[in-house]
Image (cartoon, rainbow, N blue to C red; front, top):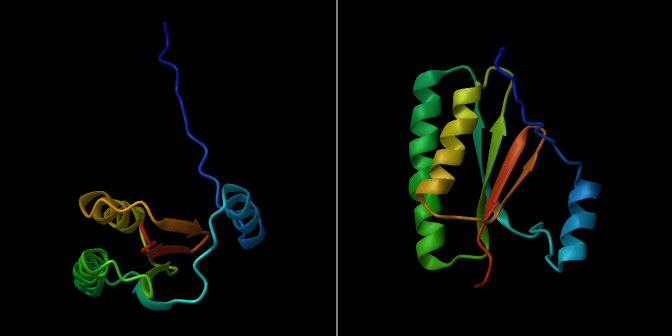
Length: 113
């Protein structure tokens, strides 16, 4: 018996699709915020520094329940899959649930609880 290969489909949504979904759910998209942009590219040393800083900054945002600040993770041409996994690990470690993914970006923000 041959093993069955299973795969998951990862869908990136457009702004219009996400807007419609969040409107239906009663959630407003976080457009009016001050986002810190973290650029991830092919430089492993700079990416590590940027991701470590982003985690500290995210921790501050969550601790202060800051609904004005946010973080935009931009995955440039040299970014690797491990960078995406590291960002998701940070979300898991910080126990956050407020983030949206777009084709080359992940936006983190804090909502009023």
